[in-house]
Image (cartoon, rainbow, N blue to C red; front, side, top):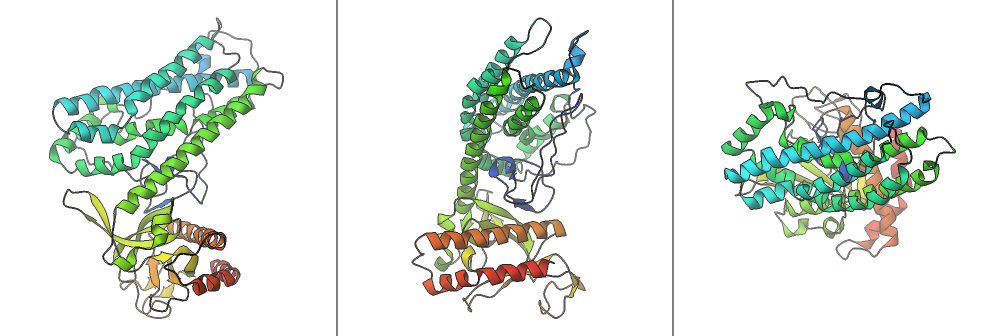
Amino acid sequence: EPSNKRVKPVTKSNSLTGVITPVKTPALKRIGQSISRSISFRTEARPLPPAPLRSRTKASSFPRRRNSQCWSDTVESHDLTAKEIKRQEVIYELTQGERQLIDDLSLVKKVYYEPMLKLDIMTESELGQIFGTLDSLIPLHEDLLGRLERLRGSEKTVGEVGPTLMNWFPCLEAYITYCCNQVGAKALLDQKKHEKRVEHFLRLCQESSFSRKLDLWNFLDLPRSRLVKYPLLLKEIQKCTPPDHPDEDTLPDALEEIQSIVAQVNQKTGEAECQFYRRGLCYLEESQRLPEIQQSRFLYCHGELKNNKGQRLHVFLFELALVLSRPTEDKDGGQVFNVYRQPLPNALLNLEEIPDGEAGGGGTFRGAFTGNDKVRNCFRVSSRGRSKFHPYSLQANDSFSKQQWITCLRQAIVQSRDRMGQSQLSPHTDPALYHMAELSLSSDTEMADHTSR
């Protein structure tokens, strides 16, 4: 489930770009972005998968994106340098982005929340969980829009913008509550979409011109998308700010402030996501309740993998434990995850990458992944020193997902063993096994690197 959502760079008609790194996706971007693959990762973004768009009998001709207008389109003439023009363009994009966000959030309240409440399509409690504190974000962004508009001079140029942003950014701490709620909100919305009245209402809205072909979750995810864009916008303004400009002193402080807030929101969102999935685990045996699962504060990644029988599993790589599960529904239609076999502490994990092309009927897998003449995108995890636990041979959907799993697993193993050396040992784990894991960390890493080459 890694996101392929891109934001275009700032030019006369484009927006800023966000670069997705290959490892350790923070939770903030993960919430609510589209599925492009079968696994979630902690890069700079950790989106949760929304349901794919349902097939529609009538396609809307309304454009998905608004017509973009540049600052230079709003003035008849100017005598600014190219760098100064670029600065005004970015500030104008910042201002227009606030206006569009306000319009979209107001639309969500008017055409989604209020009609569904009035028509009793969902209960007030359900709508409150799905929409969270979205209504409170509208006046917050109206405040910034007003401040930015007041900065524009008679020639429609903005001079100093740093102090305004520095004073306003602390308001964004309100996003902690909203973003932490999104994990449960997305799960409930997906559950309610199975009801005919809800599905019909949302489909009609998506087919209408006002939606720009976006579904409800796209709108609910807009604040999160806006939040992570502020640091990018500030960096672009900085690039276009001359050394002798008054903003030269205040923009670095403003950038540090917004980056700190984004990091704080991301940390809290990651903790909320971890707690959400921990609550969704159903243990078939008491021995499966590893303390490492409850002690984990975040998820490195999670997603679908196949075992050596071709069965689809949902695998969670928590901070301190690897958990294989089989997704199912509870009596209310919500998704739960039945824990499959025995979870493994990350500090005791052995990781083996299986080269593509190995014969499926013999060799390492001994008949694993039947139906494939040659196995691909496979790796194996086992527990060091625990002979009664069989190794798990797992297959990803493609090479990209496999490499992301390999990267996250290696990082989880190293960090868990580092943590193990600095904290008190679990009472449920044999200390000798931890000692063995620590001693062999170097050789295990070298073996994995050699296999990948």
